[in-house]
Amino acid sequence: MSHSAGAPLTAVPPQANAAASATKLVKTYGKGETTVHALRSVSVDFTAGEFTAIMGPSGSGKSTLMHCLAGLDTATSGEVRIGDIDLTGLNDKQMTKLRRDRIGFVFQAFNLVPTLTARENITLPLDIAGRKVDKQWMDMVVDRLGLGDRLGHRPSELSGGQVQRVACARALVGRPQIIFGDEPTGNLDSRSSGEVLSILRRSVDEFDQTVVIVTHDPRAASYADRVVFLADGQIVSDQRGLSGDDIFEYMKHLDEPAAQAGPAPHDAAPSGPEQAG
Ligand SMILES: Nc1ncnc2c1ncn2[C@@H]1O[C@H](COP(=O)(O)OP(=O)(O)OP(=O)(O)O)[C@@H](O)[C@H]1O
Ligand SMILES: [Mg+2]
Image 1 (cartoon, rainbow, N blue to C red):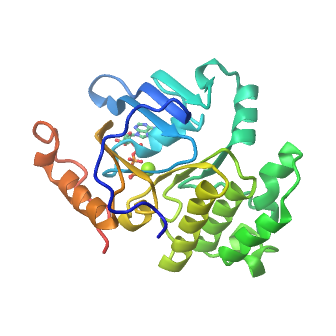
Image 2 (image 1 turned 135 degrees about the horizontal axis):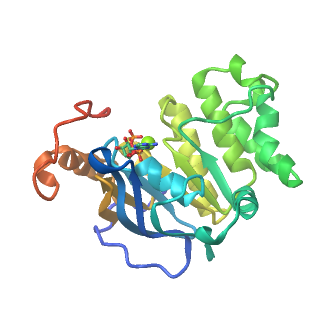
């Protein structure tokens, strides 16, 4: 793998050239006894031209953070910037344009249009924006993701993994400045997963794009330059140069209740997510 393995573990200094950033981001659901603190004042910068993985237990706030960063959800308080643009100041139309022009998404729900073919779904964001498809790049992405013979099919005629790969191709094909992926390799076999990750890696190394993914898989996270760990709505670790083994060990430690400051607040959610490998 082409990432910088074996470097010492260092805290990440604040960055001036952030492709995206959150400042004191708070997201609270509900009121009174049922209040859920999904994000408790999260501040983080994602450096331009870098690949970051966000990890943490189920319910720790990873998807919430991503949705707020990508302008798909609004925070209770705090600030989000994409490049130098403060999202809080944008109206719906400006937000739609910003998302369309600068951001690629691969989310847990893939949001393909059921009536369009795989090919039409992949080029949809570019078609809407009136931008030209770079055919060579598209062919490479489609080929590497093994979608070449499925392009004429609708989502209902594809397997779950193929649908997921179409969603990845759609995010990649317009080469947006920043790509957000919420478990983009969640249901993929290891070969497809490796292809998706190496294309993401390549889009950072060769095209200077910025990639931020959520993943539960230490191997997937090891493609990243940096790993940010969330627990209970807060960043508990932010490190560079971690190997898959380092990440696996750290996640085990996060799952131990004693590892988190103070006693575990409750014993709900007994279903620890997969600890594969
Ligand atoms: N619409 C909502 N209403 C109320 N609570 C919510 C809502 N969406 C998320 N939450 C809660 O916010 C917390 C963070 O959820 P989030 O989806 O960000 O977790 P996650 O880290 O992505 O988890 P997973 O790994 O399971 O996807 C959870 O406790 C969740 O139950
Ligand atoms: Mg999630």
